[in-house]
Length: 421
Image (cartoon, rainbow, N blue to C red; front, side):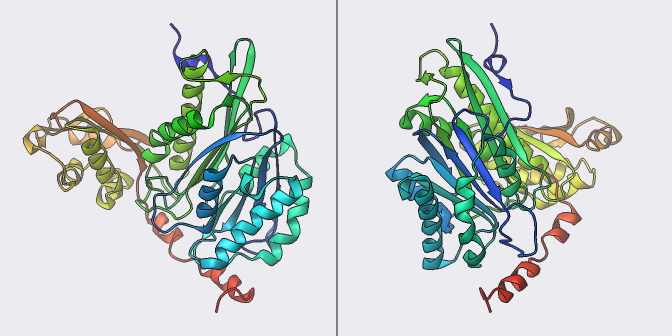
């Protein structure tokens, strides 16, 4: 019997507008720098009615765009999402809320929608007002030059410290009809569950009920975006929005033909995007899988895996190519979860490093050779139960610190714009 993943295929060069009935546009507004030429304002729109679902940051400090998009999703289904990079519109008070609502209203007026049918996402520097003097005049053009061929432009417009666009699309057949799922996302720094610092837009031409879609999106996010961490920092703007417009003519419901494949395909899209975010982490050099097994509960396995994945000491040793299992077991121990030191086994890159809480017999040179690789797995067996959890993470480099030392240039530009003192 074929696996679920064998039932769908990736679409070469596909992105957020790969699914039928979705169009997009992106422009340069100079949001962060009026002299810049890079795209920084984008729009994705369904030409047909949709059902929609979303998940957002669990940070108690939430950007205006998150608050407005959540409010709109509770009241209606979204047919359009406007996204900007360069300014997070976070911690901007009532003015920030007015700006986020105005962006939705401007799009709605141009496309003949209700304001509540438009979502808004922002990413960039926190704490500065949005330079609407450069953005607002461009909305008419943004909404009028929409095309299914501009999905890649959207992927380019939403990135900030990313080094590359992150796109993926898949297709599969149900009853002789093809269903497509397309996505673009951004994320490279300030990455930690729940919801990493990221924006992810996913569009599908399947017909799915609102309740089924929201339930599935929650499950897929929990096993993908909520399992990644780069630096342990959680943003104010994290958003994942999924739109389904039914343009394929295929209706999908749990227990019916095509549903399991759809679930597997959506999970694949999110997990691939999550991995891309980690691999593109700000100045990272290694992609690490931290797998905790033999735990008394999933919650305890999760806490331990995240503790190891976020440890600055552990991550620094990975950057230096040092197979230091002592740092790993100390992070296991301070997690506050049930641990019996004498039962802990740790494998590094497939080789035993610790057995029963003590040094294993593997030669240190063999371990050191394995961790020079760009990607490897840390497996921690607590030997206390049957639960497990996996987190995807990175090393911590001196270049990461240097990259994140200052955002002064943008604050200086904001001062010139009269947005701050």
